[in-house]
Length: 208
Image (cartoon, rainbow, N blue to C red; front, side, top):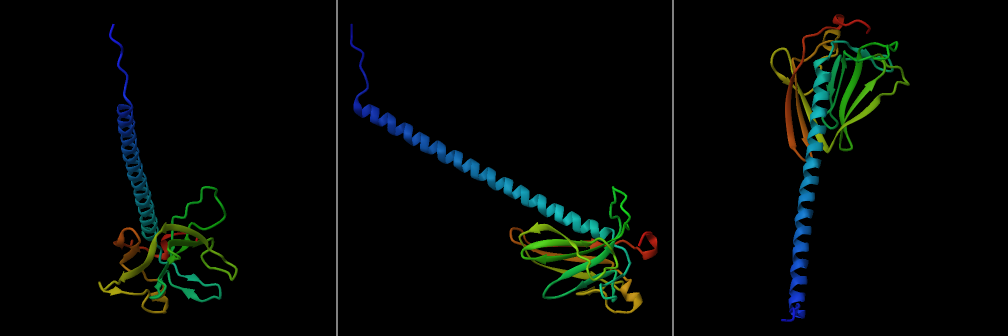
């Protein structure tokens, strides 16, 4: 009988080296797949947050109401107030505030949108005409926002950088025809959206 020939030391070393190279290649491939998968999930998450943020902003604007309010010290605030070049804010009265628990409150809500510390924030007050101790609730809607600008289309078709154009009673209750949003995002650059506002008046809602 012929003796069974075994592996030489050189052959074993070559086999071990090949298996090691195969293992390294497999690990690198798996690591690359996992990195791509993680990047894809992060991208999807950012897109969902962006979509939700834009939808919330549009939902507020679609329910804007021409209802001026009182500031904590009794001054009148416009139904829609857009101001500030250094620190842009947009504040307005909206309707449609859901009340599933039938709390004794209005269906109207005062909201303010602004950018703070990299977040696009939505603030709202539990009452329209605020007292000196009225504090808003803060919702951080979108991260990664470095700045934003808003313009307002008036009834003559001209764009304005602030709103309203006057302080008389008629101006305080006026609304623009449309709002143009320019949002600067860390990942998506400059985003522009145009929102058409509904034709409303303060008398169209009860409970103010």
